[in-house]
Length: 327
Image (cartoon, rainbow, N blue to C red; front, side, top):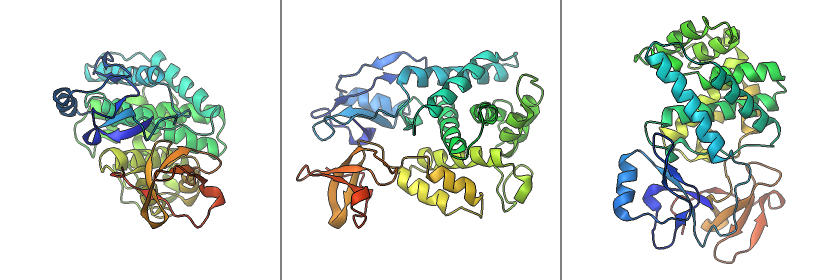
């Protein structure tokens, strides 16, 4: 199995490895199906940018450290429902969000890492909520690396799941963190820390963020964790950077926009080359990642021309880089 851009799909050599859902969480196309070109065009119009596929190149590759699709889609639905209640000015149900926070926390605690399912595998209507779930996973992985206890992890999870809730209240990009804070601070069942995560997720250490241009120690560490996760996922989804390039961009922000401690923990917690990723190795040899072993950025790879398997940890002189159009 591997993840590809929908533009690279070939219905003569590829079948779906994971189902495609519509905005109501119904299965549009099941695992094992091929996609007719007319249907592919419709999927693109629905905002679906990525597909999980099986082909000869990815045969035998599994992505074990990935949240299962039902758990992921249930989490997305819970966030979506909360947003809809806020938009409609009705009282949102808190229990589903609390349950999702607990489920994601449990998943993160019992795995060395979690490979993200890109929000672009969902229709555009669901992508903002998928983004919220993915930001939460990234933030929890980072905080776990930093030694956060369960109470702080739960506050972080709820704040991250709802970091953009202000967008359901105010369409002004500059004002949505404040709107989200004002809402969450009134919910006594949520910690004020979770509200501040929503408030500060667009701030930066240099005081050039928004909405308050705070800087240095006024930028809460727990809010910074969400901010880094949010920035990283936006680089992948909105800027369409491959994970490795997005990670390089985050590392360049260390001690400038976000603390070195958080950026380091983030880089040590997130895999930038998940199994199934096509890459280039020394002298531009096409290869495919087969397994994440001991180092998230130095995986096991298979040279496509020779099918030789190489552990990049044992070969430090081998350079690796993304190769989106490798064959």
